Length: 238
Length: 100
Image (cartoon, rainbow over all chains, first blue to last red; front, side, top):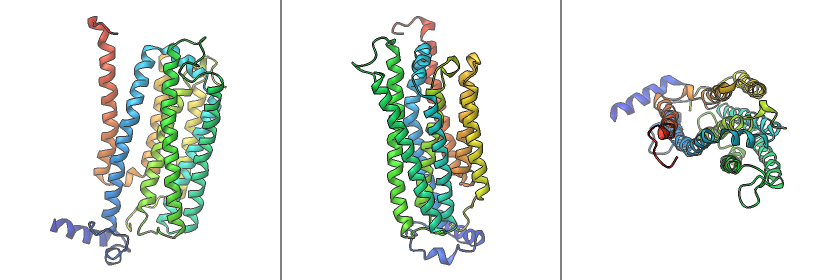
């Protein structure tokens, strides 16, 4: 332990100008960490461990998707025809834009730009909300067209298509719930950034909330082709 | 953190453009029928996009080796989940086990 302490101290000094004594006394340094650097590394590791549990959480639903799609490939293509490819593609673009603004918000914190953090966090929140609005209209169309599994499901469609739509609503619904949580998280980070809480020496909350935001983007990167584009070549979509 | 890597804005914008281009490609190639290759093509593009996000936007490149191992292990376990699940479903008919 003494050695680890030693090497952190000296390594920290060599690593950059603000390390060392200044960061030893940083009010944002929790007492159980040696240095700001170790604190950020530990927090990042912890966030990744959480994201791995999220990967497994979504993974279970993707596994169900895989099993049923293998069993009923025609129902999957037919179900995919009912989804609006243009809206799915639009939302993919919106989320990619939000990931850029998120990355820029973290960068603004690293470079100590309060204005940059606020602008990029607000943009991230707006883009995330845009995604949810588009999603709302997509869901509404599914209700109007009797594509929601259950007693009101369009009886002219094959029964297996209900499985497709069950997984569609489950996967996109849980994803949308993650978006809502992400937006809430960003509002908290925005309030902290507004108060000038972050600078080059301390931006851990921005960094790890950003990791969460990018993860939710990645889930959609897989959902878009797997749900919307299956039957596109055979004249599906809109 | 003082020794944190600050990625130039140019790099972020380049990754952003690459992600949009890949989104267009995945949309465009979906209009053609490659038969059994449709899904592998779509997944290859999605994995490429996810890798770009993980490496650059999430900055995994600059994280500690331990964090990298944890991240890779997560996706590796996901493959085990899919592999063993499909191993079961794919082999059920071989022995004539009822229930499938």
